[in-house]
Image (cartoon, rainbow, N blue to C red; front, side, top):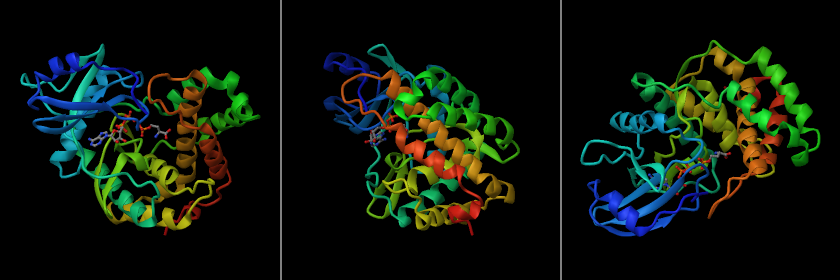
Length: 320
Ligand SMILES: Nc1ncnc2c1ncn2[C@@H]1O[C@H](COP(=O)(O)OP(=O)(O)O)[C@@H](O)[C@H]1O
Ligand SMILES: N[C@@H](CCOP(=O)(O)O)C(=O)O
C-alpha cells in the first residue's frame, strides 16, 4: 500500500512553493508500499516522490532516514535524494503529517526474482553496510527483540485465530531467543527491509534501493538474513538453494562473513522471520485502513519461521 492520508491539490500546491521543484503538473497516490502514504508528483522540474509519514515512522527519526539517503548517495550508492526546501529543511508538514520529497528513481522491482537478481542484491547490501560505516547518526532498531515482544503482547490473544497453535509456537520461540539471540557480531547501519519491492532494476542492472524507513543500527548479518527470507523462498515457501547461494556469494564478494556470523545465520533468519510475521500479524488483526491499503499475509512468515527452526547447519542456506 498505500495512501492512508489524502492530499488536496490546493494544499499540495501551497506545500510545494517552498521546494525547488517548479509548478505542479499532476500527482497521484501510489498503491504499492505498506507503511506510509506515497504520491508520484510530476512538476515542471521533473518527477518526485512525496511521502507522508504514518504510524510506524516517528518524526524524530526522519533526520536519520533522510540523512542516511544523503550519506549513501554521496558514497556512490544509488538511492533517492531528499529535496531540500529553500530554507534548507528536508522535512515539512502536509495534511497533518510530517512529509518529505525525494527524487524519483528509475527502474522496476523484480516480480520474479532470479538467482542473478539475488547475487546483485547480496552485493549491494554489503556495499551499503560498508558505505554506512561512517554515517554520523545512529538509531536503535525499534523492531529488535524488545519491539517484537511489544507486538506479540498486542496480538498474542488472537494469534490462534490466524493459525491454530501459533500462540504456543511463538511463546516457545521467545524463550529460545531469550537464551540464544547472538550479541557479539559486527554491527552497523542496516536497511532492515530490503525486500524485492525496495530494490529497482533496469533490465538486469540494479538501479537503486528505496524505502530506508526501517533503517537502524543492528547486526549486519541480520540484514542479510532478512534478504534470504525475502528473496530466496518460492511462493510455496520452499527455500531456493540456488538463490540463497547466489545472494550469500554476492554479499561475501564485497564483505566476507566471519565464522561467528555464519554460525548465527539460522538464529538470525528465524528472528527476522518472526519480526515480519509479527508486524503482519499486528496489521492483520488491528487493521490499518485507508484507500489502496493492501494487508500482507502473516502465514507466509509462519511457514518461514518453521523452516528455519528445522535448520541444522548454516551450510543449508548455501554458504560456501
Ligand atoms: N524514489 C522513488 N522513485 C521511484 N518510485 C518510488 C520511490 N520511492 C517510492 N517509490 C514508489 O512508491 C512505492 C512505495 O514506496 P515505499 O517507500 O516502499 O513505501 P512504504 O514506506 O510505504 O512501504 C514503491 O514501491 C515505488 O513504486
Ligand atoms: N516488507 C514488509 C512490509 C513493509 O513493506 P514496504 O512496502 O515498506 O517494503 C513485509 O513484507 O511485511
